[in-house]
Amino acid sequence: MFEDRETAGKELALKLSVLSLDDPVVLALPRGGVPVALPIARALRAPLDLILVRKIGMPGNPELAAGAVVEGAAPVFNAALLQSAGLGSDDFEDAAARKRIEIAERRKMYLGSRGAIDLTGRTVVVVDDGIATGATVRAALLGLQVRGPRRIVLAVPAAPPDVVDELSGLVDTVICLFSPQPFWSVGAHYRDFRQVADDAVAAMLAEADQADTTKDMKA
Image 1 (cartoon, one colour):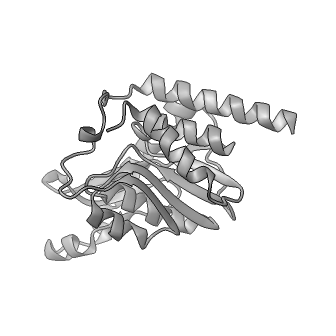
Image 2 (image 1 turned 90 degrees about the vertical axis):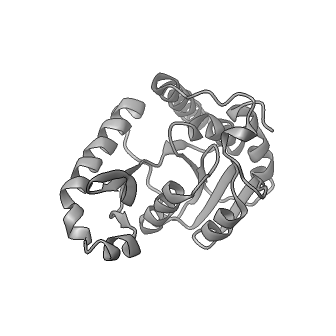
């Protein structure tokens, strides 16, 4: 059990620091992934950015994910679900457009006018505070593949074994500290799993940005 998300991030940073990660960028899934990712970015001396994903719900059942919109990539859909409902990706064009607006608004809220980091040829470390079903992370990883990274590393404190196996096929390396069976919940692995506020996310990203700017000035 981790004390909190920062502690989990420090433990992941120790595992990642022994890997040969060339020109790394750390991407966090907000909100809970950001406090995990911050100590990793510090340890790797890497910039910290976000990977923003918004779920697209099925008509009449918004909680059932038809797919997801990932920042910087085409929407990802559950083809089997759409086929069973007699729907196609074209039926979700308006929904996808709304989700892109939401993503742009969230980036502005968290990062102001700062644009997304170019990932071409870089090692990308994707971080969240844990994985339950894997749907959001899977969409994020599929979206990343079209942005030209050289290597993708998934780093999470806890996830179910079957989800780790599934996601390992989408990345080059998986670092998962705990993968118990049965897997009850992400929160069960933390003593402090309180919700991360939007202003806290923005503050952590600003801190990471300042540290990265200072590093560049010294270089």
